[in-house]
Amino acid sequence: MLSLADSRLPVGGHVHSGGVEQAIADGFIRTAADLADFLYRRVTTSGLVAASVAAAVADGVIEVGAAQREMDARTPSAAARKASLAQGRGMVRLARRMFPDHDWSAHRPTTHLPVISGSIGAASSLSGFHTALVLVYTTMSGSATAGQRLLALDPADVSIMIADLGAECERVAAEAAVGLAETSDPVLDIFAERHERQPMPLFMS
Image (cartoon, rainbow, N blue to C red; front, side):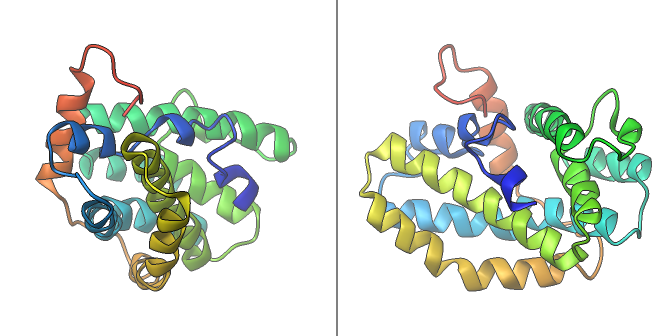
């Protein structure tokens, strides 16, 4: 599960900033402290929602088709849905190679990243909590890395920032494992929509 969550793999995490690129372009993020605040905000809103869906799938509380509909309903931004489906497509491709005997047909023709992550968690014999924890961490660390690159921050500072958010990631994962979350953040949706209209963005989202 951790191998498939690695942003260096062609799941596409390394080309998705999770709204950081647009937040920087709009002046919402200017400093390392701003980035830390953004990461906390993302983890506790969209990160929580995504992790709750992944946890439910991993624990067998909800089947894949219903989970797809729940993710659609909880992702009001069309641009954010597009990014989730793009990363989900890459994750399915890797999952099929890592677990060739597993039936992944429920994830065709498209699947959201949290939904396929939940199925991989189940295939890896992980609990919903641990599946959610992996997803929350990668949600946060991917955006942190994007911020580091775009703001030319000291990698050590960003690593400490990620470590400092570790306890919050565990808290969010624990909450996600209890049931489907319904929180949202309209500002993150606005960033997603504005980013898709940028003429030459460095990241896909």
